[in-house]
Length: 130
Image (cartoon, rainbow, N blue to C red; front, side, top):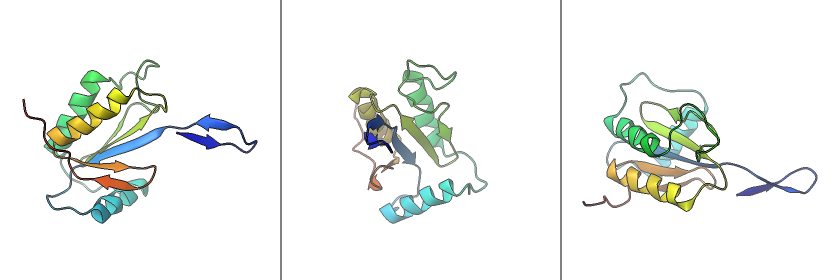
């Protein structure tokens, strides 16, 4: 993804995705509301959802976020992990495989995907069967 600067030149910006552990049947608008609350700094007191913990452990096992290193797909590290979600700011040139892994792991952990670029919400992808 690119963005035009004040001088008209194009510069790369991060590609932002987040995964959300909301109750079964949550609507896209409920996901967007949760995103807004997070951006406003509101994180309720709750225990980490095991789905989020599992996703975070799995994605960082493949793509470590600590310590921050130039050879990872993360534009911002460490990842923003809360009790009900993980936000990922990816380098604009990250390999497609990273996005495929995020989608696969979201499905395995029954998480909703939020695409910050256009506000799209995707239900959990079909679970991968071994």
